[in-house]
Structures are given as structure tokens and as C-alpha cells.
Image (cartoon, rainbow, N blue to C red; front, side, top):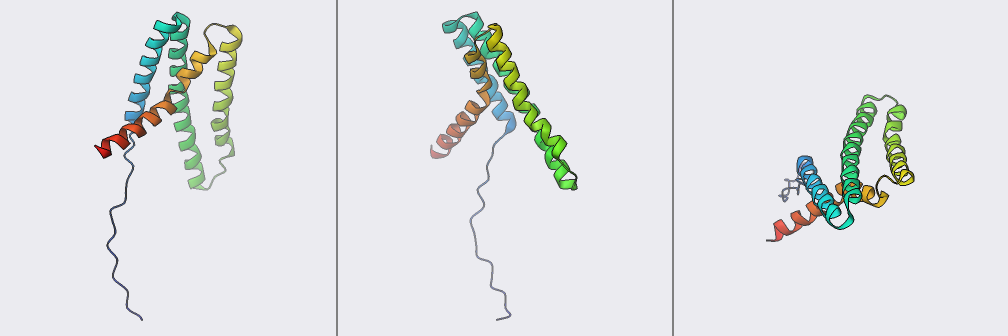
Length: 137
């Protein structure tokens, strides 16, 4: 009973090979494609709206990355992360205010800006699909 049982062989853990760099490249490609399609089918304002939303998406990504890292650093050190967490939430308010300003000013279609802003989410889906089909081929 005092003996230790030998370790059972296990399969190697499945690791996710998600590259932030690859996602950002995919996001930039989607913004470029979306803005070209917007220029062709929606006009100048729509194409620039997608570009503006894409720039907002990159800003949002880096703000999210920095604020999340700051929250985890504060939590790991045992300090109160409430003030740093406010930056995380402020990001949503800032993006919302920008979209409202675009909507009320009518400078470009808010739908185009939201389409460009969604580039990161679409890039994650595209990357997932690429990963699925790459493994099955």
C-alpha cells in the first residue's frame, strides 16, 4: 500500500497555437478587403467608415491587451486592481462614444464603422476555420 503506482502514459496535451501576430495580420487583411468592398459597393464614405472602424479595432485591441495585463499584474502582486479595472471598462465607453459621434455627425455610416470594428472577432473566426481545415487536410 505504501508503494506509488507508476504514472500512466498520457497523450501529449493539445496546445493551442494561436498567434496574436497572425490574428492581427488576418485582421488587417479583413479590414483591407472590407474597405475595398465598401469603396466599390458602398461609396467613399462607407469604405472610409470601414477603415476608421478597423483603426478603432486595432486601438481597442491594444487597449484591451494593456489593461488586461495591468489587471493581472496588480492581482498577482496582491494590490487592489479596482482602479486599473476601470481602464478596462472605460474602453467600452470610449468606443461607444466614438460610434455615437460618428452616428450623430453623419460623417460616415455607423454600420461601416461597426463592420470595421468587428474585424478582430471575424479574424478569430477565420483563424479558427483555417486551423480546423488545416488539421483535417
